[in-house]
Image 1 (cartoon, rainbow, N blue to C red):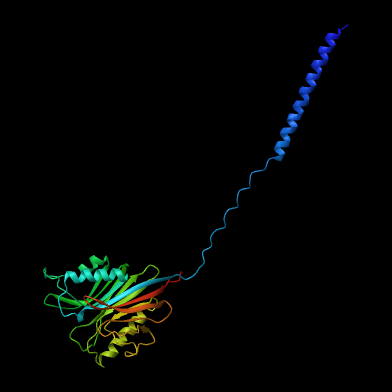
Image 2: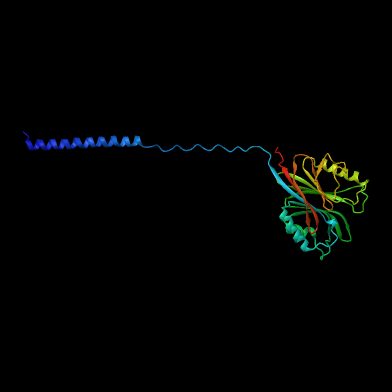
Length: 281
């Protein structure tokens, strides 16, 4: 027979055990409730939709200038080329066409205009010779910050002139497409007999390079005078001693601005064109 003290101790232990069990149950229940009340982490953001590039024509600009050195009646000095280089950089000229260039490749004391100027301007150069007499070469030139892919020097057959004028054609890679730049010198004065010969040559250029825009510069008359109006536009300026610029009719070349600047080597015609990107295949 258990004593009262033993029963009391047993009851006390049972109470403690029951209390411990209740605390464990309450703890589990509390843990579950906390988990239920936790805010779930935010869902990852959906991936951004791909950027769709619109197939549109992109317009770029090209700035061309031209000087006719045949108008100069003195020797060209290094200081002239330094000043011209500063002006070309200030005007941000991409392509420079020259007419009436004289070179003396066998005379060490004479400045080579093209070599010296292209080195200063950091431009590529192409020279088209028209005549050589006693070590002096005359001709036309094109200098370009863009690569020159091809060039051809075409003479005018049938002109009544002793200077053997020619037209230097260059295919300039302007990035978005090629541009044909022609630098040419013509007889002065231009006779009525010479005009059909020159008009035929200009028309032939338009056919030869019909898939690319063309810029022609030199001591040209107006396209109307040579009856070449359908193929070419021209700048509307008072050229006087400055070269005239023709450019292909159409939307590929759009004239933005034009002006005549004064340089140490004569009047310089400057024209800026919008150039339409060539459509892809």
